[in-house]
Amino acid sequence: MLKFIKGHMETIAGVEIYPIISLLIFFLFFVALFWWVFTAKKDYINSVEQIPLETENEQNS
Image (cartoon, rainbow, N blue to C red; front, side, top):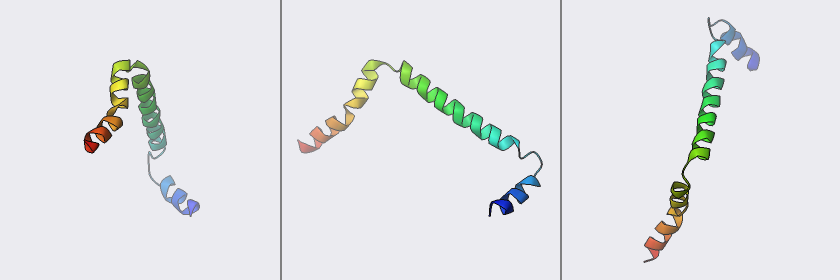
């Protein structure tokens, strides 16, 4: 099965750039995610942390 796919992919001109682009997008997404996590304000993290508990208490009232 892989030989079948590989054979067709080799006939496409410029196909070698797509894995590089996808790896770059993947890497940039996770770098941005880590940057956001480490620079997020503690007040925001604490307020988001309490959301599941607040909705559970409101439903019981």
